[in-house]
Image (cartoon, rainbow, N blue to C red; front, side, top):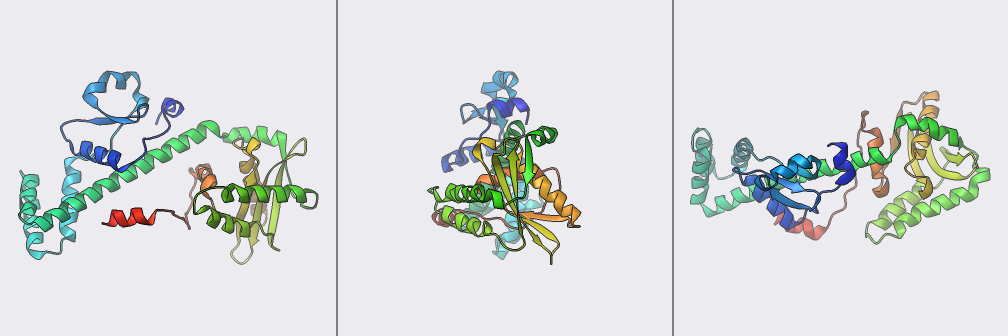
Length: 315
């Protein structure tokens, strides 16, 4: 993804059922090529936009490929899941043929309506999966690229360190601690999403200070508190856990969290601890890009979805 695309076009169209159907229909069309127009948020056939693609290459994104080998592998997967021994064997023999394998496969499944329905359902599910993965990949790429433009580069942290310093004096910053805790919790409690209270409840527990917990404040040279990070040392596991954090809105995107996180890592290393653990919640998920160039391991992921949508999908 080039930088010009990031600066001008930073999102895919919403993946509604109708738009998903359009994408799958175009993917199956082996005679033509299609693109998503990121400006107009629709699908275009290449033959009609060739000149515009050359003029604005970052505006148009080609749809995911679905070539004959994809179709063949899908047929193989379907046959391997088929429980009907008669048609499973017949279809296996068809797959061993060379010329005309797609036509003969369709002819065989068409003989038995129930087998044909299973086939089209399986194929549709595989193609939907391909689209979902493609959407997730490009959505993440847009988000990461945007963050690279808006967020600080590593070199700029030296500049940040000139304007901010880290303080561990909780006694003189009790008021700031309470303000940050309240703002962090209200951030979720004020959301209309049904899962917001669940996140708020979990975060509230992390803001309770225990005997193994430590606080870091990022202060400006004018002694204004810009952010906070709470971490806990787990001696039995030789791990440092980042429990909670909050950056004031006017100081976000300039590297304050990065500065706090670096400080924790330095302290942990001095104690002989080499592993660190942190949870990322809804609004802080973009912070994951900070670690994309080093090895990380996801040990927990919370997913929220509509039960009715899941039941409809299963049908």
